[in-house]
Amino acid sequence: MKSLRNCKLFYIIYIMEELETKLVIALMSGTSCDSIDAGLCEVSPDMSVKLISGINYKYPEQVRAKIFQLFSGNVSVKDICQMNFVIGHCFADACKVLIEEHGKPDFIASHGQTIYHYPFDEKLDKISLKSTLQIGESAVIARETGCLTISNFREADMAAGGEGAPLVCFADEKWFKPLKKNLLIQNIGGISNVTVISQDFPTFGFDTGLGNIMIDYCANKFFRQPYDKDGKIADSGKVSQSWLECLMQDEYYFKVPPKTTGREYFSSEYIENALRFAPKKPEDIIATATALTAKTITTAYERFIYPDIDVKEVIIGGGGAYNPTLMKYLRHYLPKHIDLKTHEAYGISNNFKEVMAFALLGYCTYYNIPNNLPSCTGALKRVVLGKLAN
Image (cartoon, rainbow, N blue to C red; front, side):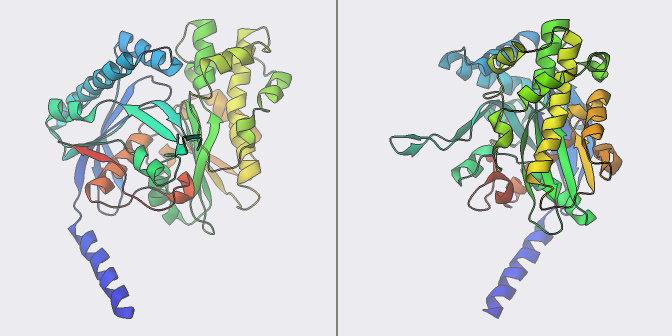
């Protein structure tokens, strides 16, 4: 048995010696769908990632509008089929901007655009309906850029019994575990998700709930703005405590992790129904929606993290890190002894953190290294995520 263990150790060391630094263009478009985030990254064998250049590539106006139609479900199979290729062309165009300036990367890693995520294990003729769909055809990206393209990261985790998310936890563990302190790595995009880094427990993570989806929806509905820039509208309003407490009673916030969610749950219909009980002033609505994001995050900590882990620090990334009013609410709801920082404090871009994470996930796929964390997704085992298109 000892000799077998030695052989296995030798094999791991041999594989590690074979790893090389790679240049990767990573692509991400989240639930807010505000742009395609594209970043040229240098990924090293020690799993560190350096962002060389990043861009926020705007979708053409009609394409973005069509994506929101996909979210609504008011589309045909033809629409989904066509948009898979349209978004593939858009992703390729984003890559071309970086390629024109920096040259071709070793490969591209594309998360794609999630249009539906169904992590529930319901059955049809005793067959699981658990599923997820990211579009942005990788064959189109590969053809138009001339680069190997790795995509479709979520499916393999679901096939292994997981929820297909959150996947960024893998990168969080590689980057933050060596700090040897208990940290919460909180991303606030359209949906909010947390990674729990502990010195006493395996890394785990889950979606805490709403991020910017409801704030953006209300900013557009009442102020004709795509989002509340710098949190100025929320800062001018007053939080309705009664409405906030009503919104906090949603069943998702009580569900025990592992758990994931998305626009399928926090839909336009969901928000419109919630607005029936909203305060009259639009500024107060935005203020309360912003407070909701902050309070659901901190309440998730209280229910599912603090009882077992003595947290020292919370690190915020994603679009929410650029909203001073949201950050103010987070500071208010967090215990005073917990430090609140952003990714920038650790040399990681708030804007392109998820891009950097998918560059690392793609790097591991390229070298056939398992890159999911079952403790975060609920999968039965470690698997290699992603599919290749030449």
